[in-house]
Length: 277
Image 1 (cartoon, one colour):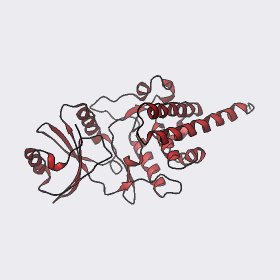
Image 2 (cartoon, one colour):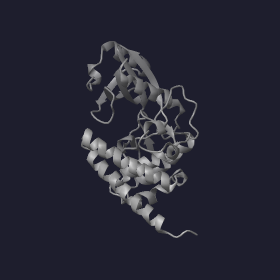
Image 3 (cartoon, helix red, strand yellow):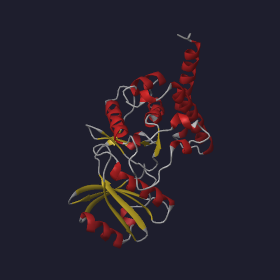
Image 4 (cartoon, one colour):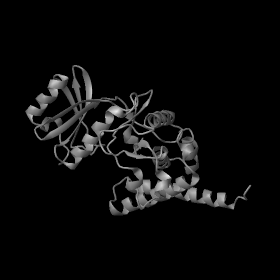
């Protein structure tokens, strides 16, 4: 199903939503960022609400429904809250707390970086161990089976796995982590490791990215061997996506992951050359 506008929805679906939020007085349809079939910001008498919609009975509905089921277990103050669910006229709609922010700037020297790390720490602390969820969530070791040894990434933390700048909204005082469509259960440092590639893509030297991530409390839990393996797996994954899918953002991410893997490979050689105590 292609992306559509709020105004394309059936009138009965409009009425079902307005029964929850009151009359809709303004609509901003968003063209990018989510895999949903409808992404809109509605203005109502009660304020603004962010709406994601998919066709009921589709694979996208399963994914969006899982995100909605997980939302009540996610920490307040850094993840937008689910306000309501409407299923009618062949559609599944979810209304979320609207965050009037912008996408995070991950470039060197950005004032957003401390906010992102603070949110990463808050989310990790709140989701370790993983809450008792009402829906099944894949273990990260299974998602990356064949890419990395399971013992490196096993754990009991609910991790986001997609820390793109688009999924980090900054409202001036804090960063919000949005779009929990593909979480996994695994080691607490996994989210920080995914962020490493994004930081390098944004212009950080791999060394500087890792220095920045030392402020992420879970980063110190990862062994050098686990991070080496993660960097290597990331490089192979993004290279594969760049070749097989070729979306515009894949090649820059493949280059960033390759640089991180090279940096960690060199560091591993240095570690191996150091005499034992």
